[in-house]
Length: 370
Image (cartoon, rainbow, N blue to C red; front, side, top):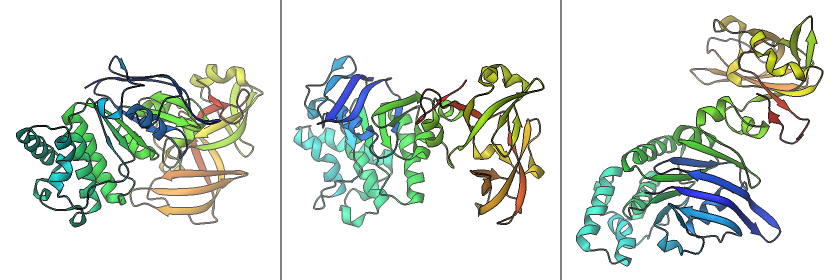
């Protein structure tokens, strides 16, 4: 068991910068998820830790030891890949035991470790089977078991659920979370799926174009995104954005979206007062856009005129895809809602939970205003 540190780590492939000055301190026994779109640098960061890629500059530490020049086999890590990479001619037992045999671990110790890992993962009855006799979920558990038997200081997971169907993904991510709780070891997990990140992580590192965008707990990322990219990436459906203008009128502040003039609650006025007269981007999560017939009590609700473009019945909720002037909005509403496509409806926005992003410094990725 050990902490992991990325200390000003750079990784370049020729002129291309895959990782740009990455600084992360991962605590012992923490479950950290690296998340971001394809090409953001998350897998490269994991491979630099594993020793599969050489760091261009900076230091990677496991515990207090710099491992830049340590061979992968000596870093005391175990990695689970997107591909199961099981030997087809070997049984499950032999696949799990193979690495230990190469290290000349005593036979009795191998048997104990394999049996314990199989019991943790619920695959004891599969030890005599070969990979072709297993389902995708079972093969992935064998791959995880092969990592467990090594008893490493750090577990690395590189998108291990991407080959599974939707139901198996949910089941397996719950098993991995339970595994972390049981093993009490440092887990570092790479995924492009922000739902996986939100449900599994102790902390999440959001990356984009090689840069670390924000490092925080799942709830803080959701409630207090640092910038427009994080706000749009975390949350499903993603946050709605509307180019807007902050206006002062009769002592009140308003967010003017062009089609609606939304009053800012008095408690929030001090935060946005100096933005009066400036263009901003307003962000609203789908669950903060309500059908007026089912508005939660105690919120500051402001009306906005919309037209229903698409409806999606999810059973326990309905997703409404709305148009308001030039803006497209997604609302997560009460399942009793009975709007039809093309209907003009007045929705309300919960102004207790809106976000404002300032495009004046960075037009591509405006910073959140707090």
